[in-house]
Length: 381
Image 1: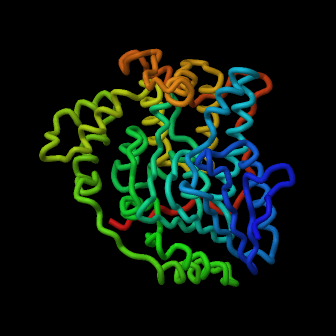
Image 2: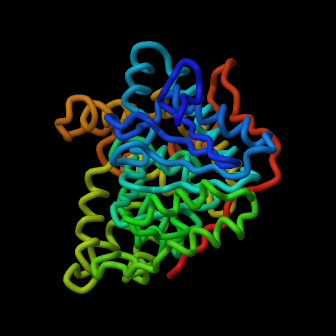
């Protein structure tokens, strides 16, 4: 039987089977969007199980039709508007600390990625050792459409995808299926939906922390799916040619010079997404992913925490609050970005997002010393 992870919330359930613990994200009506109670519950589980010698393997899954649709940013925006930017800073501080614990975790974690995996959902899974996608998995980092940026340590794993595919995924919010996740390295395995429960049952019988043993079990159920013909991964040379450009303006210009009938329909969709997204978000996202290429996961999270605090404070733009209004609250899907064009977002402003926050009570993200610097991303292309 599954029991609540914390006494005051049933939003994370825990199932114990021998030396395996299954953590179930349990807000199905909200597509398991991460609330502050869920983040706190997960943190408690990961911290205590790492020290518990009786626990050798963690499984993470979602209840219902989604794994996790992201952090509950509507709740965050509402609380910041009503109360203080510090509510948002506290939420992201705890979430990023959880991401760091997962990324450097000493015991294997298997995330069963059925349904939607977006934003914060990627933060509690992609940083873990094993990520199992399936035919109904939908992955995306849609933050630039919301006036945010790919956070939760995404600048670490996006920058380690093949070529400049991470820039494509992070800037456009492109939706990837399970086969694409496996091919680019976001997933470590692909298991058909009708075999997922069999895999889960096998994992619950494991009495080992050896990653090779766990991998061997998942391998018995996994397949090598084919990429659909329309996938941008089939035209990685065009992705690289366009998304390796120095600026967002140059990226859009390069895409516009491609012939969609030759390059594929993904080019047209990418241009449309980039034109709709917050200009400020696009510029800070590109700079963040580029910085991430040379940083550890801890350094990425520390920098992203600075960035998200500036976003919560509305220091240089209030696009996050406008994006939440237009996409999540009023749902008119017609945000009025300020500034409204890429040309008005200057390099000096982008650099300020990476600076310390000018507030005597503010502190950088303080991460505990850990043995690892983050997971290796292994593409299957």
